Length: 187
Image (cartoon, rainbow, N blue to C red):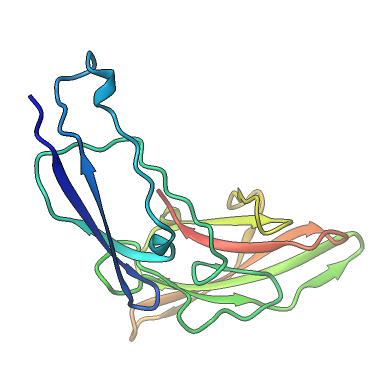
């Protein structure tokens, strides 16, 4: 049975702008035998840098959603720069930041090794696995870093009054290579 519907997605960007887009699904239902029932939709570029998104319609199914962080700010910070004041992550999409990216400090060199410093503050009780630290040489291709293997926690300071803790990470790299680092919410 064919039941076309329009589905509207509304998002809030990091600068509190509201964006929306609508997709009309053809309404074909019937399972795996109706291979033509599957449709692909691509969100417009206005949906970049979202901190939250919502959809308000029932009776549809989605799968194979692909999310990609294509911007450098505010959820990522390059080495040797200072993060903008709005560099935050809202991990539970409640409109309140859970992670504040402080930025990168001065790097230290010893022989062929450069140790970069990356600092962020997070809500107390937030698990280490809630965020992913990534690195890139070119700012385009990013790879995840593993705690204890690719970086270590140099210090952890707790602010009980504000319910936050600040972590300073040490990331050793080849000194001949410029690196960028960013922090993302874990899937």
